[in-house]
Image 1 (cartoon, one colour):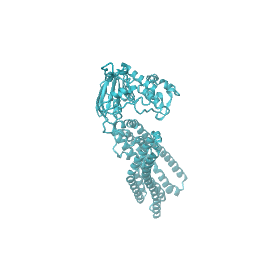
Image 2 (cartoon, one colour; image 1 turned 30 degrees about the horizontal axis):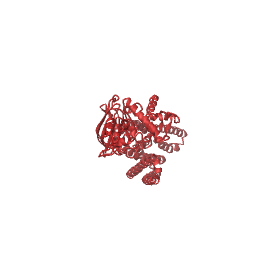
Image 3 (cartoon, helix red, strand yellow; image 1 turned 90 degrees about the vertical axis):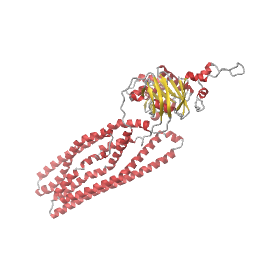
Image 4 (cartoon, helix red, strand yellow; image 1 turned 135 degrees about the horizontal axis):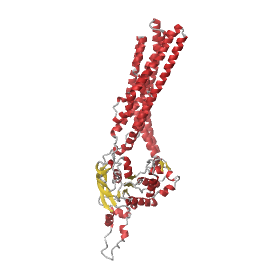
Length: 603
């Protein structure tokens, strides 16, 4: 088939392999189908040349019965091969569906921004639609043009030659169509993907656009893209429709020309009257496959471009083989000389970071904005790959556990909370099936948000809308915390988990951190507020992507303890032990100051 004119990746070749297996039966069905298509022409030939001169009604009835049977089988075979192609198109979609989702979920985490966004989803549907349509069958019918030309030549060589010339003209139109429309199809697909991308970002950021009065600017961007898309699409459609119209008109002209030639041959005594009608019908049938290919040209070009884009993405992100897996970690976390950058970027945001934590430890990571705190959180939980160095749990890197098991090992609350459409229970359970009711409630209680949930309408069955719709930012953050500690993961990473919490929420967060430590887990908190820092065992100060200071809580308190006054009078009174050891905003800010860095701590 024409869509195989590009070199496919092994995965796409495997997904399209059933097409090759089905090729033989479909060709066999198409062969019988095309033979039966000759029945109409021969029926007219026999009626005009035999039945009418003999005036034999029984012969007419017999021929009519035969042609009815032929038409019945013709319809059955046409429906059968059409259904086979529909099943093949659906099989292709099922074969690549999981791989497409894998690419969508992993691409931006390993290679940066995904070209043309989720265009790959539409590409799969484009290929499926073409495979399920009449385009491939028209290509399978093309070789039968030679048979029809041969039969026409048997009627008379001049009729065969006229039809051959007509086929040549249509093939020339098809090649011209391909040459002109291929670049226009690419431009149409490119601008269409840009439109979809802009529409999606507009939907996601509707609140910001309205609040900041950016609707007019966004509309200007949309108008520019819309104009580019319409220009490319209109040119493509104009040319395709023009060539399609020329093809139909030429086919009708050729049918009339065949009638005229047949009439001339009858006048000259070189052919019978039946040849006029039979030749006209058969010449139209000979041109039909070419006309079908041209009418489906747009879909064929779109399918080829879609396959090319899918091939590029599949090769850029090879299929991942799930590892065997290891026992759940229980001892320690070790980061050794970790260096990382955002996917697809060469700008290092984390450099030579090394530290070790043991079961029951909790680390607060503080530092100015842009100091690498969030980058560290993303690398530690495996979202970003490390360019150099390693992150190990009980001596093993994260890629030694399969994805399903990682869900039991790592819990994560990102800076930007994202709850998914579904119930609160489904979100806490990470949409695992079947849901574990006891584990869901246990996680909510550990995050101290059980009472918050049961006060909502429906409780754990409360349905969350798009982008957490229906819940406040603080409620979303507390449910996200319950989701992170669902299943008692060994490593829990919290990136500014209290940015939207009130006093009650902060107390719940502190309770959750203590609970994780008590059961032997490890907690890492990217923190700005000192209330969270008060619940940790270690403190890390980051600056410029590097560790500025790493110390235990005891070392921090010792360093923060002011010197005793030299004299009882005239000197400042020493603070009490409780005041000396209490973590206050001023204490933390002083603790993180150095000639190279001043860490900003916000209450």
